[in-house]
Image 1 (tube, rainbow, N blue to C red):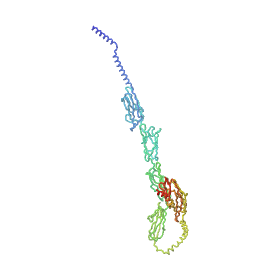
Image 2: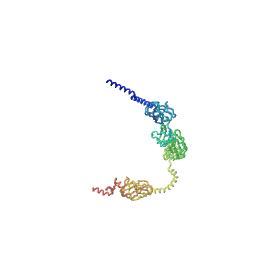
Image 3: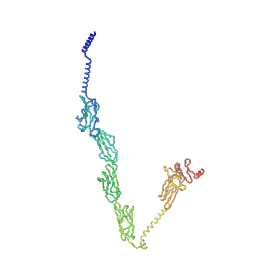
Image 4: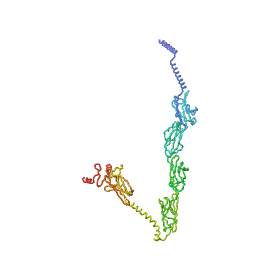
Length: 593
């Protein structure tokens, strides 16, 4: 039994195996599908990788460069972004499409942003000529490639910069300077030392206003174009506000001469024009000048005018006196006189300022032109030569021959006989002049008359700034020395208006403000105006009584600091007010207290 069943089981397994071999198995199919999928994916991936085109974005900054080595915009940064890994080539082409420089050649770069720097030079290291260039980046995949470019301009020329109203060196006399200039419209203009940008109009014109200092001023203007090229213009402006200095060598001011033609010479700064009395004079290389002028008799004013190259003017005037007439010369001794004494007093007169010589020896001359000296004569004939030389060089010469002889003494009778003819000549003038002398003596010795008056017999003083015055009048019959005083009741002088001052005949006005000689207001009361006039014929006096009334404000202010007191009354402070009371009552009050 057992053996049969095992045989049957073996037959069933055999049948199953045969049944299975007749259909498809799942394992091989799954394996085939997996292998196929991988093969497809590999093929698609390889094909996509082989056929892909990288994407790139590029830009250049700055877009204008100036590769001139000034460290300003000498290079440009060519920035590009890859969306995937690629082999990159960066090249530079000119406007005609010719390759100028290769920055990067088929270099593998990963995805992301990259920067290539171009220094504006070609492949052989020379600076590229000015113009517009194209920077191109090419990103290459396995089969296909893509390229992007950016434009860059090379500009190595500095901008145009001209200062149209200034030369290399300028001399001006106005401190306010306006500079006019011209540059490129895209340039930036600045003044040295000032960061402020100067505005430029649409045509490239600009104005600069500057306050100059005396002397040399250096003005430096710079213009910078977008490429960083800089143009600089420097100008020197010399501010001259002082007029040119004139140095007159000859003639001297207030000089005297007897010549009709005079040479004016001096020195001025080089480059100055000079005129003498309106006539232009030639100037040497070092500023020296000379000009001849014709003088007239008397005072001549020479006007020297100098003008520098900027218009500053200096004027100098000198006076030259021309005198051709010789000086006068008078002596008290006539030619041929005879003297009996050896010492003779020589007295003379000439023009003020002249020099006098006696026989070659200088003689002192006074400011009025008078001179005197003693001459010692020798026995016999003596020759005396007197010379006067004025400031202009004119000479006057006088000669006197003097005789010195000792004669015997003359008798009295002979002297009377000799003087007798001259007595008649003196007698008539004496008789005529005697009545005139008597009349003159009468007028000189007659007494003077004096009248004193005032515009009012009462007066109330005011404060000094109020200007109150009492007008007095003094009437004199003739000229006299006059004294006018103000006296109180005791006869003491409290104010002096005139003291022995000479006044002519007629009416004279005086003013009194009511204050004493010490500047204090006088207290109320009666006063006497006493006027005295004295002449050679005697003195006369006149008086006038006046009354000074009280002004409470004025007397309260002045009596507070120095109360006034006399024999008859006393000014005291009673309940804050200053009042007058008899002096004896004050003494009684003090005894009771």
